[in-house]
Image (cartoon, rainbow, N blue to C red; front, side, top):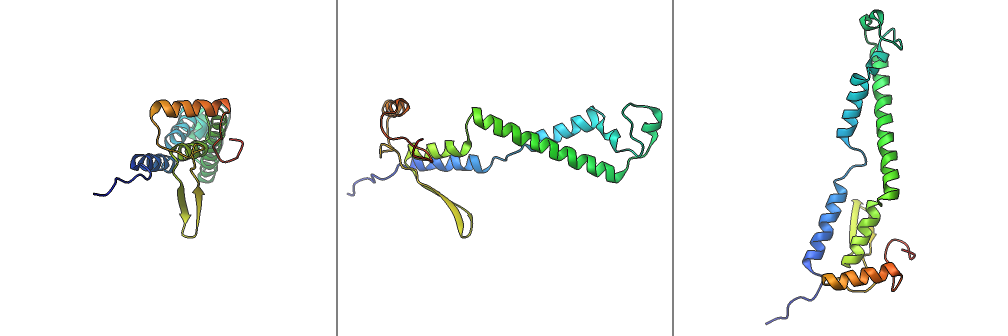
Length: 166
C-alpha cells in the first residue's frame, strides 16, 4: 500500500484557481452603470436636445421642433460615453487606494496558500506569481493560520507580497 500524497492540497489549488477565475471575469468598468448613466443623462437630464440642429440651453417650441443632427448625436453620445467610462475608472482607482488592489490581494492569496501560478496571456508571453509562503508551509489549521498572520502583522517573521517590504 502506497503512502498518501503529502504534496500540495488539492483544495488550496482549487481555491487559488477559483480566485483567479473571479479576477479574470471582472472588468474595469460596468456596462450596466454605463448604460444607466447614459440613459439618465441623455433622456432624464434632457442632454439629447443638445444634438438638435438648433440647440438652446432652455426648452422652447422652436428647439423641440428642430430635427436631430446625426453628426452631433454621434459626437454627443461618444463624448458622454467616454466621460462615463473615465469617471468609472477614476472611481475604481480611488477605491483601490482605500479598499485594496485585486492584483495584490491575489498575490497574497497565492502566498498564504503556498501555490505558484503561471498566467499566459499570449502564446509566448505570460506572468508568473511565485506563491511562496513566508512560513514555507501552506497547510494550517484555523488557529495556527490566525497566529501566523497576527505575527506577520506585528512584524515578526518574513513578509509576503510583490516587494520585499510587503
